[in-house]
Amino acid sequence: MLVRYLPRRFALVLLAVAATWPMAAPASTSLASDDSALVSKAVGYLEGLTSAKGRFEQTDSRGETTTGTFFLQRPGRARFDYDPPSGLVIASNGFKVTVVNRRLKTIESYPLGLTPLGLFLARNIRLDQGVFVSAVDRTASGFIVMAQDAHKRSQGSIALSFSNQPMRLQGWVVTNAQGQSVRVRLADLSPSPAQSWKFFELSDPARGSGPAS
Image (cartoon, rainbow, N blue to C red; front, side, top):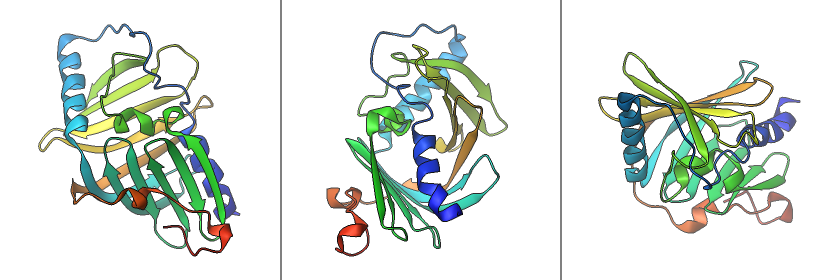
């Protein structure tokens, strides 16, 4: 069943570049100066994106698409509320990423630092440490920063897409070691009022306390 497969599949996507983002020894790059300038521009934008809300569209390697609402509250917090009939809610509380399926009443958690979400939820984003920026590609409306594990402990990668005018995170593509990719596109991403920390804490739906908050 697709519904049963989705939570595990998304969790694997989050872990596809596991250990990609540890803040360890500096990673050398051979980027041209103009590429390095774009990377610095992306980092500055992400660090300034403190509280935002938008819509997302996720397409997996099978071409199946799901949609929902995305909340970002840096540092550390994010939440994905999938549209019905999915039943999925995924949230980071700054320490762990929790995946809840309201329909199946299941819950799974993973350390935030072992997921690509840790890249742009960190207080200080460092693309020169632990992360190897393999390329910067220009697009018609912006650019894409492609990164992977500098220490080659993971064969996965992530590609962050940005628009130039206005400067905005458009989404990302996570690719695992087997070459399977999941694309997330963001829309209507704009500043929003800060949410309570409780909004990013998901409860176990099997405990009879109602649906995940």
